[in-house]
Image (cartoon, rainbow, N blue to C red):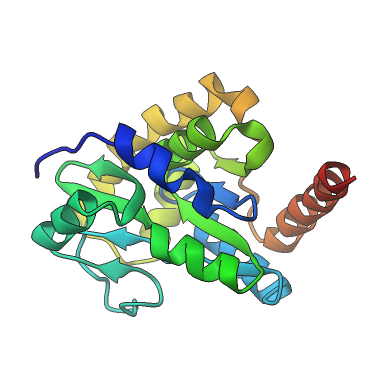
Length: 214
């Protein structure tokens, strides 16, 4: 897939974030989707989930238009060329993920905070673009053996896909470490403790929200 220059797109789309987004990121298996789901269940009137686009294959339990918008490579290219994508990354070789401008606009029009469940590189790109004060970014980290155990336990990925994800994980974990001051909060993955993680996120989010509003 060809790559696109995004500098023009930056100036045209930064303003779409009327409300600073809450980003949950981490390597595969860290539990970011579980945290996102818990946040949505806890405060559905407050957060709106931004449905990402991807070129990867749909899993049997996933619903197009709810979990992701599943696109062909050609469709993804067309969306990038026409500036429909705020940010995108080649997360795995030949597999792209992106955040749609239309999703951020939709959530903003509903008066809600955009909630993004994205990869580490995507999160860093948005933080770099909007600035730390305009993003609430949560990174979830975990030891490699816990990441692998989590991926295997969900029984959704082939051995080859698991291997690909585990090869990427060390780079993502190192990025979180190297860019630790970019994130609002870095949380360790805790087994059977999603509610506690969400409590921590919401408590800090509320505190910072009040500070920035005053």
